[in-house]
Image (cartoon, rainbow, N blue to C red; front, side):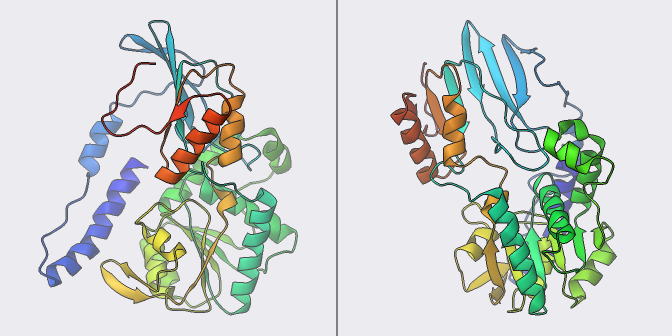
Length: 361
């Protein structure tokens, strides 16, 4: 993922800097390059779930956060005190990945709050909405663009589409996963069925969960460009999930003015991202610094999100034997504030920390 991120930055900056040069603006630089990535990777050490390890004077233990393949929560212990951190906390009952593990007793908890102020629709409703969008868009002769994170979201959407196709609920159109990173990540998923939940393992036993008729994974850049330039009705799943980089921007640039087509968001869109601007109904957006009028349909199936919603976050916290104090992080202010209020209302003192704050708990 780090290597891919550095590569995408380099590719995108070639385009951006051509535009900046025409506009008389200074050249933009990447946040990091492949050399920096290799230095970082050389320092990575892997540790299994539930195996305590030492970090300085602390003991740390990972447990399954149920968010994406390999995601973890961390428990830190030192001087008789325990600090828990959720990282990204997943949803119970999602396809493929196991449910988040429960939290032991902690003196303090740092908890994510991405959806702390709202609930998702059910998985079944999200899948039905996916099928409806594809059917309607293809019926108009358009193309469905699905911005999706390469790890987790792409695989869940692929599995959902296979189920709907097998059930005859979506038309028989080509489906392209146009992302080298997603293609490589899918291979890793195939190698680790032990990380799937029992229901997924049973349903997919003996078959490839991430392959089906009409589905093609695209890695070659020339093949990707040919796909962008094609007018055939189809479904394109491509990174990045918030349209902040990657091949999805090439597809959007080509079809943003096509009123027959649809961009379908299946995950969270952070403030100020291109995806959020489209969801907020902006009539015009910038792609690679150039303005484009928005004619494409914009839809959202947020229940595909791998983040727990308001009730799921609260139910997970309340199962812990003890949480002395909670701090709500990784959420926009309204969501974090709402989650802190909900936790406090259920007997867990909680607040939203600010930059520079320190507190003894």
